[in-house]
Amino acid sequence: MYAALDIGGTKIAGALVDAEGRVTRRVQRPTPAKESARVLMGAVGEVLNSLAGDPAWASVRGLGIASAGPVDTVGGTVSPVNIPAWRCFPLVDEVRAHPLLAPGVEPVLVGDAVAMAAAEHWKGAARGVDNALCMVVSTGVGGGLVLNGRLHHGRSGNAGHIGHISVDLDGDPCPCGARGCVEGLASGTAIARRARAAGWTPPQGEAATAAEVAASARRGDALALAAFDRAAQALAAGIAATATLVEIEAAVIGGGVAQAGDLLFTPLRRHLDTYATLDFVRGIQVRPAALAQDAGLVGAVAAVREPERLARAGEAVA
Image (tube, rainbow, N blue to C red; front, side, top):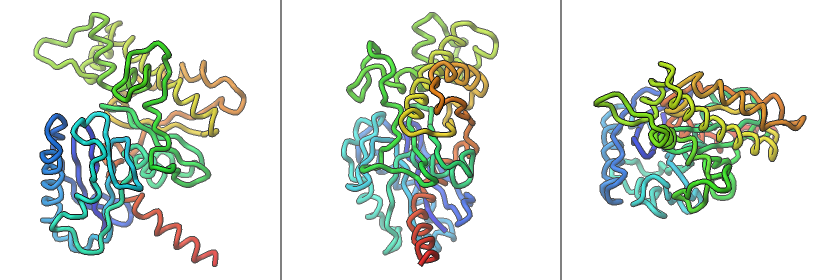
């Protein structure tokens, strides 16, 4: 049995996951993203406490942490763009010190989108694909790469962080410090912001969220449809740039915004045809993620298991 944490700007989820990637227990708390570092860590502790109350906790042999990024997997720290109080926060050390974590269980940190890539390659829409980009499009936009059949972490664990590729040279400033980032155009927050700026208003009593923009788009609202089209164009530009660099075969899209379905995927495929024009990048398959809200949790476990899998493969070759 393995334990997993998935920490994002909206929620902190935890799970117990078996060796086949099945979630046997899941808990969740809202992320107090505007609170202090201590309050945030308190919410993580509550999730771990809840998991530790399950009898299967005694069988846990590894713990994976998927966190919004950037992350530093070498130093064990996180600096999520959407969680201001955590800058170079020593998350691995903090989780390691949890009193209910068994001695010898070493937390393994991975970016949330890299975790999603690991999960989709292990059990989901990228299974059997040797070269893929897997993206989380939600409060933020992140990505992870599978290259030559293996998860590609990069030096610090941030390889594939497509949300902060600039696709609009004159675009708005991004909290990361750059301009015109994919995240600033395609995240759920960006979709709602763009729709409001164009004159769209949510139904009375409803919040101005991407989900409400999607609901309006399904009713044929032109402003809502345009907001999704612009997000899809930004995603297409980022995917095509990635494909040109590393020759991916498929792009897997998950996260809350992907739940809009064809409102996102139809214009995304159309725009991708206009950006991915070179012979070796044409025909990229765009697939919805298969693991939905559990991708980060399953992927955190996949990241823990990957060194074990590679070690077994090496022993088999020897």
